[in-house]
Structures are given as structure tokens and as C-alpha cells.
Length: 636
Ligand code: ADP
Image (cartoon, rainbow, N blue to C red; front, side, top):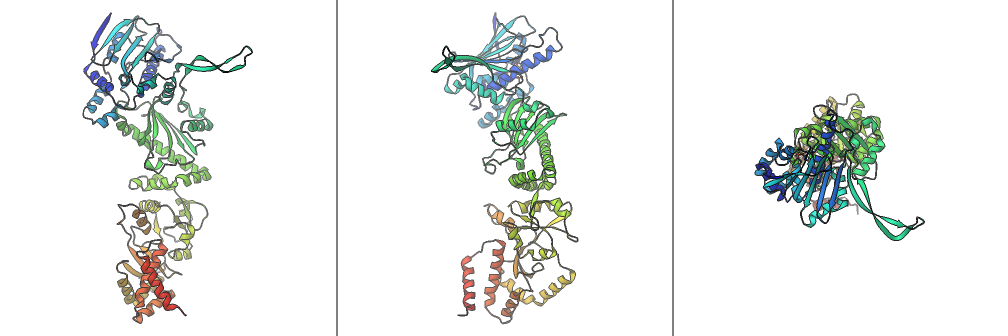
């Protein structure tokens, strides 16, 4: 007795989509069918606990088999099975509420978006039609005496008939389409690798007959060279228990490290692992690793950050971007949750509130882990920071400083007075009496910073100075503004405010006296600097260039590398040391109305530029001026 039935309208649309699919990831059909099989076993197991009519302690398994010649691939389970009505309701209709919504979305989608949406999960059973032109489902429910067969080419209708069946459960058989791209699904190695990729952690064994070769042996049991026989063995393709499903205290660090190396193809143990298990409104497990070495392409455009996403141990996607903030892009690992809504496209899922909640929580756990490492295993933290510190600084700066409070205690700095890194909290703890600011200076290294003329007064005071060597440093500091109330101050920006009132008064007085000279210098340099002033910071050195608060020279340099930002400049102020002999020389030139004043002023400015590491506007001019001076001074 067989009967032909029409698919429901929505099903027809979905089927049509699957049949015409040009989705490149067709292989996910296997994951979908294996998940269905696993769900059916779950149901049987669950019901058998309370229903005495069901067999208990059944040996659950999922069996894959294929017939190359007939192009058949089957997925069989010994789960709950389907009655006739269930077949009609489950396979002839899209039952899930999300599906019609999904189809709605698809209606207005562009071709490209369609591909993205098909990559979603929950398309379920119908995904079989991406690779098969006919599917038959043989099923025997525990709640029915009879078995039924569903058969359809996925077009208008399907056929349901009573059938013979010698097992309880369901067997889905795909008649694979013709074409090379579908041949893969008839290859035992390929099937094995797909199972490992997508369904490795399904709780029930996924078995398949595997054909291998064995060397034949002679009568004495010695292998015979070149003679092999076929051997068929049943293999379990999946490893079943995901390590992250175990209790935290049942898993050793060694096991986690092994898992990491195998799964993420690293030959070294990770620097740290983080195992998070959250039960509450949203249930999930996260297993995070910090690789010892940064991936070689971490800073390239092509690098894709992300964690793998699983739902109930079933692999969903490889790089879920929104689980990882940019500044932690180097982490590897996975999240497994049973609560995600899988009826939406990957793209939408990535941006869902649940993913956001998980991401926030995982981020906090990683930060706490790093804080603990800094406190308890400083050497290891320094190793971390040497590799990834720049990312943490970037994290402070990113998003207009949104994360600065979370991250400010994770930054380490070199300083002029110490050989080791210090944290900001350690710097503040060791601030001198009367020291108001956290001082910093940019430079290639400690020695370069120590040699800066602007260091004169800070050195004299004995204040320590953070040495900033990364491009992002000044940006991060400018966005932090202060650390626990202590403001940051650049040694070559704005007013340093380090002199006593008397000293300041004296300089002010001198500036008043030398006003016309300063005006003259300003006039000569009017195209280059905003002002020429007497310095409050120089002690030994004759001259330096400083910038007003705001954009610093360092920022200017960094932005100059970006074609968009090259117009942004720091405001330059030339500071002269009134106590230096050179100042006297200039003053004499001025008083004598000597035209050499022009050459001197420009050379002063050029020197200051060079000290700042800013390239000269016109090196040839500079050289000409130097020559002029050298010739003039030559004694022979
Ligand atoms: P989903 O599994 O997400 O509900 P599917 O389209 O994959 O969506 O399957 C629809 C329904 O068909 C399932 O909910 C289930 O009731 C039934 N089904 C599918 N495969 C099996 C199976 N192997 N055994 C029992 N029931 C199944």
C-alpha cells in the first residue's frame, strides 16, 4: 500500500532551493543527517528511562554505509524512529517555527546572501537534496508495529508506503547525484574525514565498514612480500567524548595541551589554557588557548580571528568572529553551547545577543587569567607580553577606550631607571614625593630616550620615565589620560611644570628681557614653528622641539604612515636654553645685526628636528648652511 502526498508549500520552496543550490559547502548534509540520527537516539534513551515498553541499555550506534556502484550512501540509527504520521509531519512539512522565517529572509536575499543563508544550520533533513536526487527514509518507530518508507525526488511530492524493516530506528539512503563533486561522498576516507571534521564529538559511535589491506602470511606466519589481501573491519569514526564535556577537575593540563596541539596543529604546548564552564541562563563551555608563538600572519589582513562554535557537541562553524574581540585575535579554541538559536544564518547568529554575552564573559575570563599570570607567574606573563603586548595596548586604544579600565593593569612598560618591565601600578607606587605625573617619552629604546634634551630636568628630579617604543603606545596613553587619578605627561609636550616658582619667575623675566630676540627668531622660523620660547626643561642641552598638548610628534609619525592621516601635524614649539653658551652667541649676532642670525636660527631648528627623529624638510639646505658655517669658522 503506497500513497503519494504533496509537500507543503514551504517545504517545496526549501527543497527547490536545496536542489538548485550552488552552495559550496554541500558536505554539511552529512553533519545534518548524523545530528538527526543522534537526536533520535537521544530521544530513545530519554524515553526509555521512564517508559517500560522501551528497551533499556540498548547499544546505540549510527552506521554509515555506501555502495559505490549504485551511488548510495546510508545513515542508519537505532533511535526512536518515526511512525507514519511523524514521517508526514516531520519530513513532508517544515515543522520548525524558524524555518518559515528563514524562507522569508531568503525571498529578498541577493544571490550572495542566499549562499550565506544556506550555510545556516537547521535546514536539516532537506540538505540531503544538495547532494542527492532521490532520498529514501526507512523507519520503524518503537510506537508502531509497522515500518514505513518515505521516498522522494524532492520535487512536488513524496511517496509513503508500508515496508519491511528488520531493525528499530531509521535509515536514510541518499541516491547521490552524478558528477565528480559528489563522488567524494562514496569514498571511505572522505567520509571518515567529514565525520571527524563535523561530528567527531557525537556521543554515540558512528561506525562504518572500512576496507583495508593486510599483508598475506606464509605457513610459518611470515609476511609475504608484495602479497596483500582485502580486509574489512568496522571502524568507529568519531572520538565521541569531547574533552570540554568532561568535568574541569577530571582533565589534566597535559590532556588539554595534547588536545590543543592536535586540534590546532601546533607542535608546542600553549602558553596558557582557559577552561570555562557556565551554567545559568545561558549554558556553555569554552576552551581557550593562548599559543606560545603568535601565528605568522597575525597582523596581516588575511588573518581571521575567531573561535570554533559547537552546538551540543556538533560542529557549527570554524571562525565565529564575534566571540573574540580584536585585541585577543591570537586566541584559539572553541565554544560549545546548547542554547543557541540555530535557525538563523551564520551571519546573524554571529551577531546574536547570546554570542555577545558569551563573548563578553569569555573575554573577562581571559583577562582574569592574564591578571593571575602577571601576579603569580611573572616570567610567563612577560613571555606573553613580549609576544602579544602590542595587542593589549591596541585593545586599550580601540573603541575609543571602551576597554581601558579592563586592560590598564595588563600593560607593562620599560622605564629609564629599571632593567625590568613595570606595571602602571608599580610605577605609581614608586613615584617620588611631590611627583604629580606619570612621565613618558617615545624613543627607539631606553638609551635614545635618556639622550633626549627634554630629559634634562626630569633626570635632575630623579623621576622615572616610561619608555614607549611601539607605535600604538602614545595613542593608548592619550586615551587612558590617567591611571587611577595620576595623569600621564609626555616629557616633550606642553608645560612640564617642574620648576619652583622662583625659577619660573626668573625665566619669565629673562623672556621679557629677550623679547625682541625671541620675536626675531619666531619671524625667521614662522613657516616652521608656532612659537620660540625659553625652555623650562632644558638644563645642559641648547635646544629642543616640543609640541603642544594634543597631537604629539610620535603620533604625527605614525599617522604619516597612513595615507589618510598624513596631513595631521603636531604643533611645533622651539625651546631654547637661555643658560647655554649658544644662546649668548645668538644674542650677539642679533645685537650686531649680523645676517648669520638667519643661518643660526634655521640650524637650531633643524637640529631640534633631528633630535626628535623627524626628517628635515630640505637636507640640502641644511647641508648648505652647515658648509657656510664651517667655511666661516675654518682657521686655515
Ligand atoms: P530538525 O532535526 O532540526 O528538527 P530536520 O529537517 O533535520 O530538522 O528533521 C525534521 C524532523 O524529522 C526531526 O525533528 C525529527 O522529528 C524527524 N527526523 C529526522 N531524522 C530523523 C531520524 N533519523 N530519526 C527520527 N526522526 C527523525
